[in-house]
Image 1 (cartoon, rainbow, N blue to C red):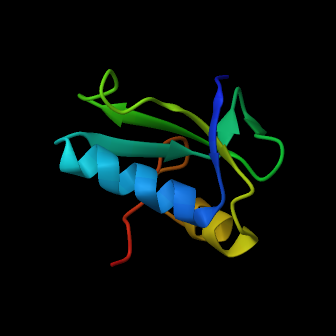
Image 2 (tube, helix red, strand yellow):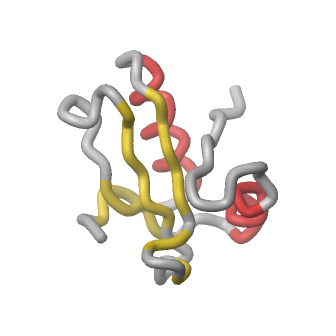
Image 3 (cartoon, rainbow, N blue to C red):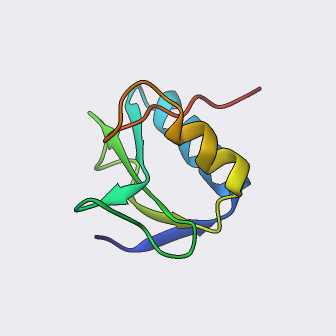
Length: 84
């Protein structure tokens, strides 16, 4: 799906905050082609600002965060809101 651009919950939160600060909309997805990403990974894309905020895969996301993403309303794409 893409390059590994980070590891862990902190990397995901930093990426989301960067996307927001640039005026983009962060999209986080757990699956690619209907299958979960390996290594507890999530795919990320910054809508509207992808050139300034590189998308890719962030691995080693804790199970609790993955469960939160799975519980969101939209199945394929999920908006991950950074917790202050």
